[in-house]
Length: 396
Image 1 (tube, rainbow, N blue to C red):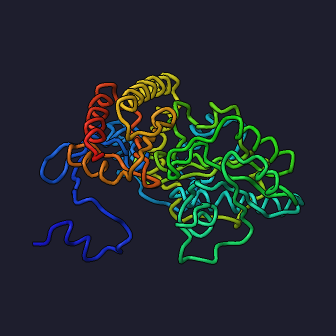
Image 2: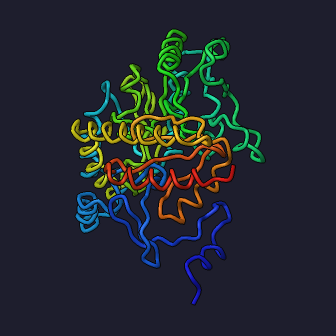
Image 3: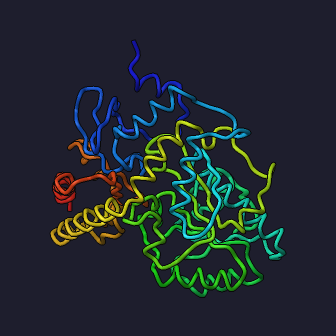
């Protein structure tokens, strides 16, 4: 009988570099492989299982929904969808509208359509969309074009027209990009795939102010940094800015496929019946799970705890940095951190996995930490101890 690894390697498209581990179950911050070995998960499925694996309340909501209804077309009203929309609506900084999708890339695609439609119908005069180098917005054609990283474009050209790329923190470059007008500017407050690189408060404030003065919409991609990851429900809340459009996904349903793009009511009204749709977007089961996630994560006691443990993690990482010549920088916010090394990080990831800690590497030299938002100080100590040993053992 073939193993799981043999079957997957034989049949699945070779688009993933998989680690030779078969996970069979998980609980909280821990995963268990087919041999029963325990791993501390400091990646959370890339910021997805934000309440931890197999959260009891989320599981119960899923089971209740599965016993009643798995799917019905968006041509009809869905109770679990209504419950989620109401929960999300109460988190918004303005009166807005929500379109539910299946993924982050779909959320970005919808946002791109929305801002261009808005520019068309309001006479803005430009369909240009400005994004920032180092950002990552998805792998479908619109979201891929918005991702201003040539390594992701290679071999898939031509990209879609009408996108302009600017370096982060380059105010003059942004001013030049705005010349002739723009439909929108799209950014992550923290570039996750770009090496856990926060954009400065000052630059974000400047970008939002100048975009609005130029008549462009402001779109915040909060797919990775949102939903409590920085200690606020939306990452932009601690930055003193308010976008016109927000995109969400990843942790929204704690592991089930669900995303959203959200906009001010005035903006969203340009998408009428027939202008956008999704067969599975906002499916009943994912919505049932997401209602639990949103209700829990938006609670200020929960968010305060994220900030508290996030600060504890930051202090621990800075302590390791002070002992290691291999660590160039520690950067991030809340429970989203990058350890910038002076050597490639692949060996660190592999050695951590051997020690029972799951992390990953972005931008070749940045070890990314995205623990579940329910992580404890004791689990932080466990993870940092492994990281310190592994990084300290790198060849000089």
